[in-house]
Amino acid sequence: MIGLLKEIKKKDKNAVTILYNNYGRKLYGFAVAKWNLDEDEAWELVYQTLYKIMNVAGDYKFETEKKFAGFIFTVFVNNLRNHYQKKKNSPVETIELTEKHERSLHQQEEIKGPVNKHMACLEIALKQLEDWKRILLLMRAQDFSYEEIAAYVSKPVDQMKVYYMRLKKQITGEVNECIDKK
Image (cartoon, rainbow, N blue to C red; front, side, top):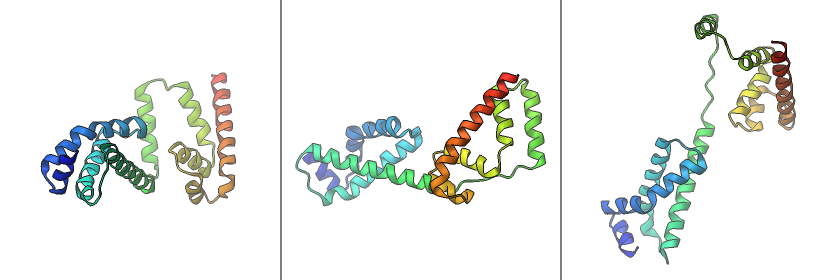
């Protein structure tokens, strides 16, 4: 480890290779398994972490290799959190459906053949909902917080969970009732 730290302090290119060989795959595995990142995002964060270690590790002293590994892991977790924060704060893209789009969707359904009963019933149930209720269901399905959703639907934050639970129960009931009729 002492040799690795010397190479890091010198900003030697071999240090990145050694860091990668010792820690890269472990960090990648952690990102994919525990944080559900795709392959590209995980590798990007691993390399971002390794280069960050190269830049700052020379400023610290580590008593053992275990402490150094803990430092690397802490930097990596901070990068993961920052990544998710950026992803979470990115604006939601909304697309207004026009008659042109609706026609093309129906044409696609005709080409595909018979539609899944559950999906057809769900589509009917969702079409009957008010816009703010659909927004609540869709945004919650994408793990938005109730606070974030409340800003879009102009409803009280403290009631959002109640609205959501009632909507889930209502939609489930309507879909099951629709399936039983078919």
